[in-house]
Length: 323
Ligand code: HEM
Ligand SMILES: *[C@@H]1O[C@H](CO)[C@@H](O)[C@H](O)[C@H]1NC(C)=O
Ligand SMILES: *[C@@H]1O[C@H](CO)[C@@H](O)[C@H](O)[C@H]1NC(C)=O
Ligand SMILES: *[C@@H]1O[C@H](CO)[C@@H](O)[C@H](O)[C@H]1NC(C)=O
Ligand SMILES: CC(=O)N[C@H]1CO[C@H](CO)[C@@H](O)[C@@H]1O
Image (cartoon, rainbow, N blue to C red; front, side, top):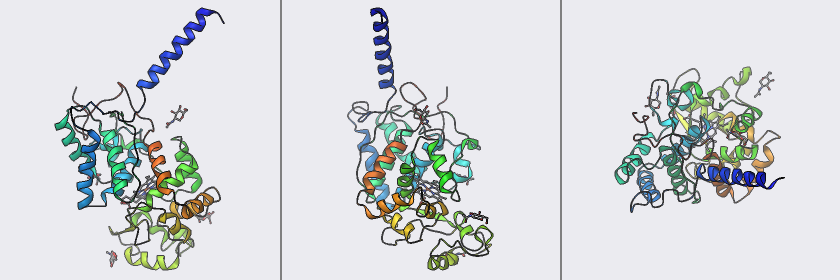
């Protein structure tokens, strides 16, 4: 190689390094960017105040991060209002917590207008809510920017009746491994599911005229009283049926699915499918679920992010900025 081409190569490498640095998430991204205010502390205070009144904010935010990041990347596109925006798509109908994000955004716009993205607020608030509900604290990188596109027609989230193979494929599309998937579905250690998402397992599963054989019969009996046949009810039950830990971030979800007490078909399938059952056993018997869950949330929080000069910092999380 000639000296000049080595030089060119060096410049190219340095340039691409500089570009990738600019275009990457960072720890402490907002340090010094909001006057004397600490952005992450402002967020944490508001999340803690809400959690004290309503601990179900934790599952609401965890699911919000999942739905935001899996559709069009972690760009807060889920938050945009509109007749045909993502939040109107069927799987989003029960996503909650939008008002908490608005509350945080209002406080941050007062402290330093136009600095903190809605996409970062989702990820930071979710992190704080996890630590409040028995999870372990963790650091998240920030510097996400907000997207301008939100279409219900972009929403192709995995469905509760997906097979493990279909679900693996959906996660693979986001560069998440089977292991990441099994750990992230551990998010179902908190929160609830409405009858509509599992009633197919209770009466005439897959044309058998009976309940899903992979569900514990006592659980079938219990769920039949909550979700009567052929009646549309808004009833729900805990995704983690261990009543002492239904609202706690721990590994009991895996113990429950091993005991045939998964609520969603995909949850139960994890404990049975040869591609995932060893991982389920490992997590059910281990002591590090919280640690693994945090790492998986961080990985999910980096899916297709906008950084640098891409996208915007929205003024309101519900609307794109006016030109
Ligand atoms: C194959 C993938 C997944 C499917 C099919 C799925 C499906 C569902 C369904 C149907 C519900 C019940 C919604 C309702 O009836 O109100 C639910 C709730 C929930 N999901 Fe998932 N989910 C998946 C992956 C994830 C992931 C990766 C996370 C986050 C790490 C997550 C977190 C949650 C949480 C926390 C709730 C409870 C929400 C609440 O209480 O409001 N899910 N999920
Ligand atoms: C997955 O990784 C490939 C290769 O690095 C990249 O081109 C693609 O954009 C990534 N996809 C997502 C959804 O992050
Ligand atoms: C449903 O029934 C079909 C046909 O009998 C069978 O091939 C399939 O494995 C069943 N699915 C489940 C989830 O049991
Ligand atoms: C809702 O669930 C409760 C039990 O949690 C049950 O008593 C009630 O009948 C259910 N509602 C309907 C309309 O079936
Ligand atoms: C059709 C429908 O019920 N859409 C809801 C989706 O979620 C948002 C935010 O909670 C609601 O405002 C919509 O009414």
